[in-house]
Image 1 (cartoon, rainbow, N blue to C red):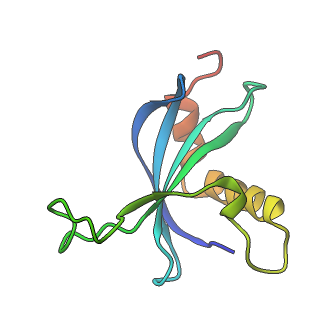
Image 2: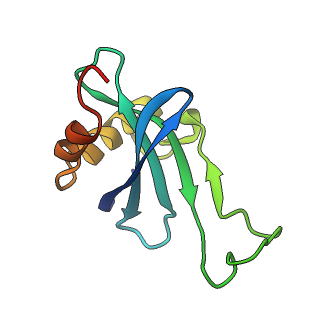
Length: 118
């Protein structure tokens, strides 16, 4: 299970024609990569859903130039997130989503940045 140490909103953006917010997530475990999580309003307009996740393994020491030997940002397919541990993958992804929305003031900030009906 991916445990969140810190999460902060970095910017608003557009993904597949939908307004979303990019959230930079720092894990508790130092061996886990950071994540860039893209969150949008869910189809019902009441909740938020994760629409994209990118593993952030950037390193300023080696990624300040065009480095073909290191893939600093790699998209995580939904079926590959949460594929370890006792819980099944969909349940792990849902627990991660709930944990992310409960981190600090993330939900309140998302409500301001992605108002209902937008």
